[in-house]
Image 1 (cartoon, rainbow, N blue to C red):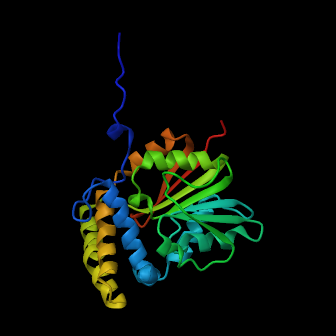
Image 2 (cartoon, rainbow, N blue to C red):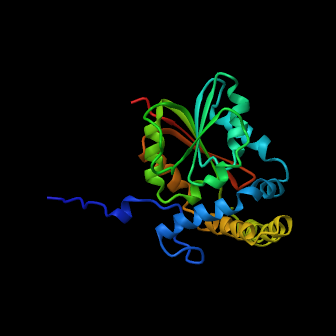
Image 3 (cartoon, one colour):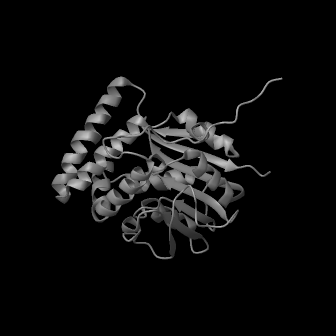
Length: 256
């Protein structure tokens, strides 16, 4: 008789990256660190983001939302809404008949959301404060690396989406080529933090952008992300890549 072992808690979870002891000691400390650093840098976040994206961010986010199937009139949940960068582009596509709810663990970031008609809820992706099957479209912009458990989060995404509902996860992924990886590492771990410190005068802002690169470098492979989405009950799981580093994970909640 073949006995299949019961997975341990460690095997059943999927952290987005290995622990980073330079920033935190354990998972509880990790979540406190993430909330604190985003709360502390919220006021300056968009200024640095515009510098990093060279002003192309809004156009790219809107195109990604269109590619993922966002159309007017949908009910949207934006997980990790932050200051509303993705949400603002979604609102422009939704029109007056659409609805958008944003969830984030950082009150400081949500306090910077400047968009009318958005419902804001404090919460985590692994335990979304919304009901079942009430969302047509779920987005998450560059927040996947800050989660505790991708499997738990993806199960929550499937829970709140209606059958046939669409999913879009935007993320920066490590370049495949060694030279491209070195160049991006130097840019995001050295150039951007120095520029961020110069623009804002805040050490925490520079610290945040160094942390950004370290999470990108340590992040699980895209194939693992896609498999976890499939395991959570999503169909048509795909990854579209722009400029070798901007990943768009899209999927559809199965109808059954």
